[in-house]
Image (tube, rainbow, N blue to C red; front, top):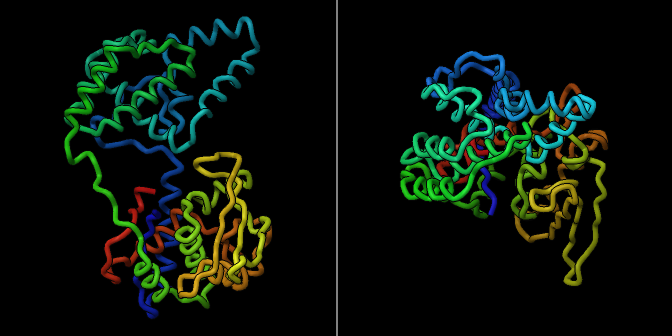
Length: 354
């Protein structure tokens, strides 16, 4: 079931809410695009040229060790350096960018642990099973969820692979991970979030102005995600700079319209990428419903109100005074989160959980 957060905004302050959210979202993405120094001691490492200050998602590829440097130099004697570098890039691309960001957090924790206990650089890769086990025991047991430790170790394993280093994670590490899971604090596991109900959708509909191009796009996204059983990330790009036609559905995508045997209208369109089928994409199917939460009506209304948006734009882009703008996942969630308490309902995910 899908997790949406509804906006509670009165007519009198809708425009100010929209402008404030847009400005906040833009500023947040500007900050996210640059690495920043953390004030937390656990996030600070000893200065070293092997570990440049980069975004978390780039650490797998950018952070090096003496072992990795030696192996790469050796390979470069047999193969062109550009070919070796390309191979490393391909290895790093084996996981999604968002996954690499989580993996980068594991690299940070591991190297902080090594700094704290004065583990020499030459011993950090290949990391011994004892070192890996003591790391997760110290930084994981009783502190974080077992899934967090699994992410850290998966990141370290990929880091080893990118640097062509053997991975020494066997029975000792497996046993240690079981102990970490047993000791995980209850606070490390989030309780299940409430699902979005039809009542939530009606409340959202009541506070949106469907003569407004952006509200029409928001309503269409909400209805398509809810009725079409798909993820927001499969309908929207993360930011203005991340739109990729091979990953994100375009306005000019092929849309099939028809009527079922019972007379109900249906619409299907293909998304180029899905979380389960990856680059094979998938078909989103919408069927007409006799209520206010009709995804087909919402979808067609969005296409009509935003008819001047070019076919090469994202499907849920909307018209603006300057031309058109993308409906990004972060901005959409920020928009509906901004004044959620006004409705007085409990629902959905938070901005940080996208």
